[in-house]
Length: 115
Length: 115
Figure 1 (cartoon, each protein chain N blue to C red):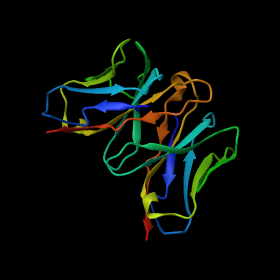
Figure 2: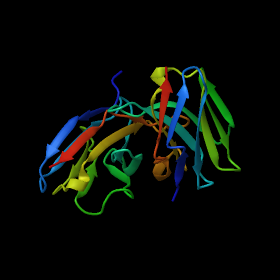
Figure 3: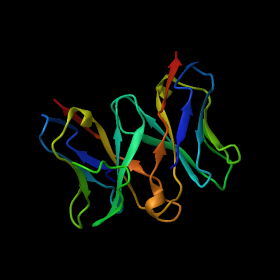
Figure 4: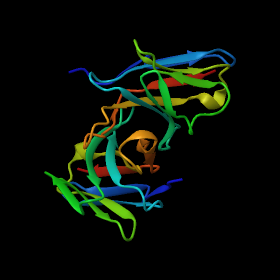
């Protein structure tokens, strides 16, 4: 029973490039959350998606950031024109969100470094 | 929105002693409170959670208590072991479904267990 998968695990980009982070939820899970963790900080919610729908993007910066969760394939968090302040660990979590099973299971994260 | 605060930020205990980590939350509508353990460079792992319809939950050496009136909840670890050393995050969410299911995290506490 594979857990939440994320790739790449480490990503290095130069300022102005694009970063694409992928998340495959646990089998049977159709809800995906993205969180960002700055060094020595807690996790900050960014966006919550179900298949083909963005449910809540209240934590996502209005510019340069976008997310999708297509009918087929992983969820993608896309950061355009990266800046040094985007350097962080990005975690996704998945949940079945059935009654009494709202636990969120986290992936191993993608550590983005912007040079 | 919800605000979760965690204190202290660091805690050092002797192996075999108990450790207590406290969190407070601001939104009285919050009803789900998970605790995550994160080792250096690893994913956050759920160790225990509690819902607002119960006051206490135990799982071997770990317990969580919830005081809805005071809006705080605590993690209790008994008979601490060196492998308990990690960063512990508390979190809260308002709902278990839909847009309210996002987690708001505290900043984390670094627990060190001295051999």
